[in-house]
Length: 406
Image (cartoon, rainbow, N blue to C red; front, top):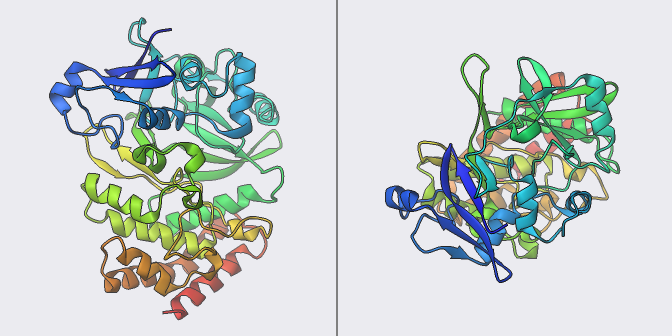
């Protein structure tokens, strides 16, 4: 196959093609004429007449695909090379993160399939088989989502759970209990609800079970349902690694990945929201308070709205990793240069934010305000999704210790 068409919001924005071992992305002339110099696919690749080649292109499209063992298994089942980004997108590109629909350039505009209803038993069987069928990919369910954790993608239509067959957009992500870490559904569910009750924009979650299989159900923030619960629209997004042209293997700052200052600089340049840096500080304070050392460059994203507005995406993948003694305490993105999230203090948070251009007074007041709200938010969250034993108390103590460290 010579090229793939890349569609967004019903418009063919460009083409992706292999070229002597590299990937090349070229914007469509109409896109260049109307939006030249502005981000369309990515803030790292604004629209221009000259094609993009090499590292940034591969990093962006590679960032749409699963990672680790999930990717290897999907590639094996499809008879593909797991390192062949182009071939994997040929197979999986009809539904991925954001608004992109990727299909052969020779085809007519792709039409989304109709979601196919599935009962609880069918969902449970697919959940039990995630270790051999990642994401639920099969002959008709062809989709992609970044990450290494076992998860199943479903669509919600007419108040029924459905399989996103034939390019139908998925709307929900089901995360199973982690095979090696106990209570991950309760842990992540509690932390996500905690963030919501503290006033942070965050993906909606619920803890549910299908035929005895417990999952955390996450509503995708890059999908919007029309009025009356009708057609689902995709919303474009990209994570921080994609925005900076970094491959998924470099998602941790310690591995050469993004820093919080990098995130702040991207927001300063491209977001029209004057409070974007404050939102990033809120997320950083929350991650310290819950002990989430897994907040790396692929867990911070930008939304590209149809209007062209760019803003920080709602928080997702929030979990107390320090609840598990075997997990690393090194933050995915360092905070004030501190390499142990349990050792971060309020002055470290203020120093980090000052490096983004926030005044020390503003950063301190913002952090203390959030720390003051979190204990009550923890009580409300625990009433909805019972946290693992000791986690709510640990968060309350950490909030008190951080406030006292001022």
